[in-house]
Length: 511
Image (cartoon, rainbow, N blue to C red; front, side):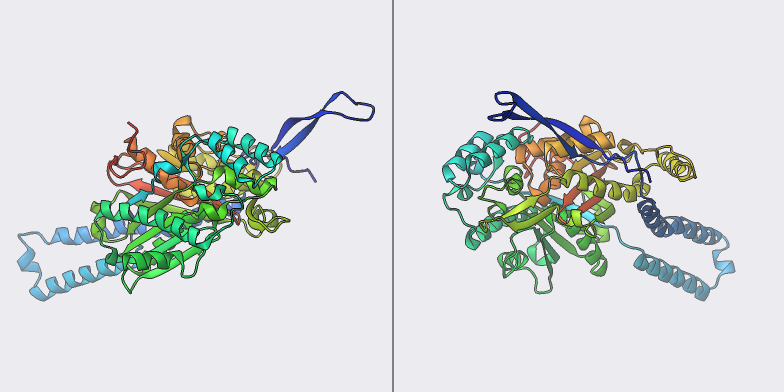
């Protein structure tokens, strides 16, 4: 059996000068081979293609059925001309016809899933005193006494190549000598994040807190009793009828998971407001030890939170910014390597930290490949789908070794917001999906300015596009996020009007 071709990344590493043996005094090197993103050109799993086309067919009934029915009823109404209206139809027939028409339209609208609209969102901007440069990060880490020289050197090297700038935000409490996670500090940090974002959102939309029917909060590591969602209910005195949910342990992809849950709940409670709050508490993700695989999140994760207001009310379409078009979630948790790639664990000293596997980029690549294979039939133009589907048919013929056609995703979306994890991950995704620098700009700018704010990162990226005035009526925005488990989630929004928002925007200073 032919061995599967892997996408490997060789790296020459200097081991220094040998101290003893026959090669004493000579410099030595070794080659380290790491797995990168899988080659998207090598194979396509047909079950994900079938899943995507299944979604398309299921929703196609509503798309294709409505025009046909409108034509039928239009033909009947056309017959009711002004001249022969009173002659051919008596009053009872006319009443019966319009009652039947009203009931039919009512039942059709009731059975058809309502569109979900994004009215607005807000991103929390921490105070300036929490800004930190990469140099200051290293100095504070040294003074904290939490790390040995090897751990300091590792963090310094990671920060240098991370793509993170010198204006991100971190709580200074984590650099205290003998720092220990404190529930009170965690609650205070969560309150400042969440309340700050939600206050901005209510001020922008002028929606009253008591009108919120659905509340979903996602935070990966900090899970308190009462929950974070209960904190919001208590602070804003939300309605006693509130449907409240608190998602934990789902990582950076949890923000899109929360949008999916909100969309389902809005179908159960139509014409309601759903509030989604996405955040991560840095003082609880912080690791104060020396195991290198637990130190990576320290270097990338930064403070941030986002609050999103959704509705499926028919009248809310006229004041909304975006309409939800597609949402695809991919979970690879059945694979043991994927399941263990990102996990909260203790080191040998009992200190908690987020462990990130060396294979996480390869694992994330496989999840991304499955996700976009499912998403493609839902978003690609007909011409791209034709070439893609034709290549699949040819590829699966016996003896055919040709590679599948990789669609041009630049034709599917006007804007892309990819979770700002690290410079290396963004480089790999851009290379494999053939995305232009313009499509990657929002992700790279967010990584530089705010760092990886976990599940809220994709909202800072969308806020960047709004501040730059790039969102036009009809534009499609693809938000893509990864998370522990391992998960890869996609959501596609369509702008229902031109959007340019500088007021109450964390990027209000840009032109």
